[in-house]
Each structure stands twice: as C-alpha cells, then as structure tokens.
Length: 265
Image 1: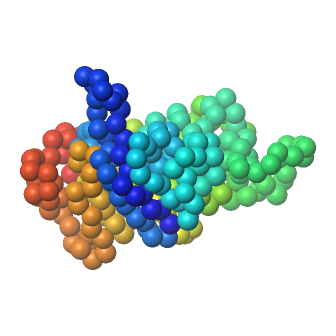
Image 2: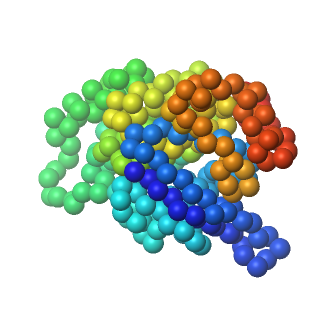
C-alpha cells in the first residue's frame, strides 16, 4: 500500500545549519497496517510524514502510494490519496465556518465542484449520524462555528473529516499531544474505532510509549533519520516500555533523551 524506497532529505545543505533529516530510509506498509512511530526529538518522524504528504520534496528515493509513484507530485495532488491530522487542533479545520460546512468541504475534497446549492437533508443526516458516534454532543451543533469548540472536540472533528472519504493512507502527527489525558484517551479510542472499522492504512506518530505499544499492529522506532527498530504481531504485544528503552540503547548506542516521552511512559 505504501512503499518508501531509500529516501533522503537534507535541510540547509552546504551551510553551517545543514541537517540530514532522513538518511536512506525505506519502509513498506501492507494494506490495513496501523503503524505507530516513536523516536526522540529530531529523529525524523515528522519529516517522514511531511515527505509522504509532499510538504517536503525528498532529495533522493521514491514514495509509492497504492501502486502510484507520487515522489514528484505536489502536496495538493497527493491529498487525493491521504487523510491527515496534525498536532495542533487549530489545523485542519476552518474556524469561522460551521461544523456541517467543514464536513461538507471534506466530503467534496477531490471531487469536481457543481452548482448544487447548499447541504442536502440526506447529507446533514449523514453528518449527524457520524458525529453521534463520537459521543461529544456535536450532532446537535451542526451550525456551531468550529472555532468555538474545545481542543478535543475540534481534533475529533478533524479526524472525522480526514477519514470521511476513506483515504488510502492516514497520517497522524502526534494528534493527541496538545490534549489533556482524558480527552487524548477519547480521541485515541475514536481513532482506533475509525481505523479498524474502515480498515485504513495508518501511520501514527506518538510521544507516548505505552500508546505506541498498545495501539496498532506494528511499531517502528526512529533515530537520526533512520528506522532502528521495527516490530509487529505477537512480539509487539509482549513489549514493555522498558523493552523499548533497552532496544533504543542497543540500536543507537545511547540512552533515550526525549523528556516528553520519558514522562509519558
């Protein structure tokens, strides 16, 4: 479903600020894989997702989504294949528009525009039914401005918008990091439900090691622009946070130094 072949990305090449963010990285995801991604600050996690999404063009290598080579495609053209949720709940939605208007934009993404007026009643019923499953009371607030929602409500809505058209690949970039623990747990529960129900191939960056172990069928650890550990199936289920810290030390030759991840182990 996703095939990444030997990609590299260097920022500010030839300067004192040169940073090799990705170093010959290769990764293959099967259809329906739910992969959690962990690693310290500067490991290359977000750069990897940005490279897949086309935010950054890679210097070398290929990115293939659903059999199509998208390496040279612009970000907006790749959007037809992807759903994406960012760390900041303010991203991914239009704050001054209503909930139903945001959902309507998401539903029409990638489709040709027509002259049909407004949102049909059947469409509005679809939105109510989908929002009701979130258990956040949003199904009765279709015309409320998204900017008035809480961070958790907004992030759940963004997740719903990103998956409304069943993307070939879902990218989640620490999408619960800015939320309080209770709200983060609710958004994660919603994430698992949607991904499993629609069999979505998913890459999820997280700073929480316990979540990385418990969620999904596969885990990869990154360091210095490379994948240093890749585990799946029963072996992943048996992992502990201490195992991950030990694996990091063995693979990288150093101790894990991301304070935020250490605090959420």
